[in-house]
Image 1 (cartoon, one colour):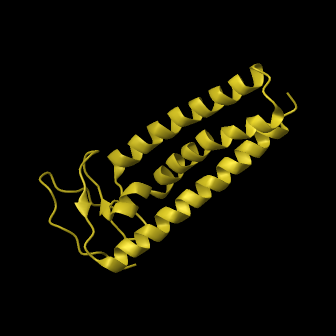
Image 2: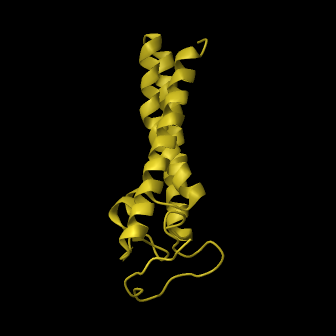
Length: 143
């Protein structure tokens, strides 16, 4: 895959090693950002499970349990971002980060930005599929 032209690195540089470089449509976050997304995903999983438990203990109608699909979608997207080393928001905005959380560098090449937007959409849609599956499982639970 082609590397994108980027703005000069910020002070502190970037980490370079296997899988630790920007590659359009493939990888746009480094270890710090990945760890951040994993933390958010774990929190999202706890929230999703807690929400499902609340729906069950309050005896909401079965179809109302499908609402667990929303937090499950967000959780799935967070896990997918970590596993694929690709941030949806960064891909949409045309930036990447291999430094500390919160800093970014701009992707200059328009073709690279287009590949990033396609990858971001793919992750969102896969997350949506996971959320729908989680919602269906919640409805089908025999509780």
